Image 1 (spheres, helix red, strand yellow):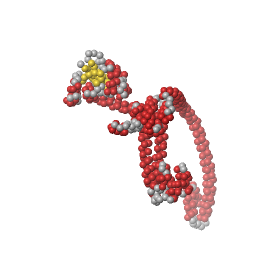
Image 2: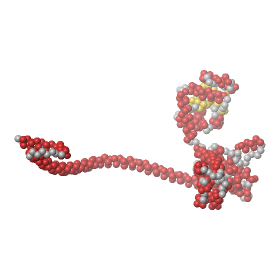
Image 3: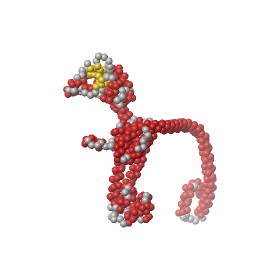
Length: 566
């Protein structure tokens, strides 16, 4: 009798379920498939044999990564060795949902593995009722475990993506192709638009970017003169062409153009020129990125063709997994399937046709050299993908081999053997990698020294700051004493100034009193003689003011009058 056990991988741990009675035909009936949704009926078919919970979230993530890659983790191996009945009268069969991990388990344990059919239906029921079949596990806890593990797995995939360096190359080559199309379309629009005004310029200048720069420079052709000949030569880089443009502008058959239309044409041509400049910058960026990611492939076939191969394959890893026959026709899938359908000749090359080697080969040798070049491209891509410190040594050697093969097809000169070339390449590559490692170690040492110096400076800064605070606290009383002395000296000076001002004021007041007394005596005499003198309003005001200022003088006057009356 066959004893079926089903392995179920959950975010909480591994579970092994024993299926009580299995009938392949009965399980596939629609009634039985519907009964899986009911917990009571499903519980009568399946029983929990063993459960192995994960110790931590990190352990769960490691096991999940292993399962996704089709590798048997140590925890899974121990769990199955402990709980799966490998020996006995009953023949054990292990049901697994994933065929990839099933093949790995079959190699590990030499037992029969079953996927699909009954196992798929049972796995569907286990996924639905797992929290009810395992004691101590609630639906909320199971969903939390799944959510946490899903987030950590996704984060790890994004962070440790093996194709993350290829993504930049794929995006940049796609943008480069799009820019080529856009610049070509916009340049044709400028040609048509400016051609109404200056149609002869199209025949003289064929380059699109140069035409746009000239349209921006010339503007109105009637304003073009001998003075602008130097600026035309700078753009065209040819004195004869510049003179031809100047002559054509004088005898042009084009229509007149308004200033507003000319401004719009200049603006649009300026955009096209800026796009062309950006395309050159992007090409330089792609070249630098290819030298970092796939230096051997770039040295062999060129940066642009190599980037197109990586983009078409999806990543450098995928390209490294392809055989040479696939790389040879990569990009010519439509032609291949059309040839297979019509039983015609299959294509000899795809994207690698843009390489210079195939263009240089004779018509009868194009297929042979494309096959040879595809072989070398696969070698270069595998070296770039799986080497720790990628260098362009192997790419240069492979390029030399392709050159020798080309000369062999043309002249019959026998090329070097592949073994000898690879020995030389390995020797050179080992020297280059050793030098690179030495440089990296030096950089690491310098970085550590810088970090130590920064730490020391920070520590010294903290200690100096504390010392400065202490010295400031010690100096504050001395400063306060000095401030007190300064304040006392300033107060003394202010008092002396006030005393001097008071003395001057006293002298002035005494002189005023003498004058007042004289005037009072004169008034008394005038009254005694019977002469009444009328004082002017100004004098009365002065007297009033003086009386207010000196009340003592008024009191003395009253005393004198009383004496005289007596």
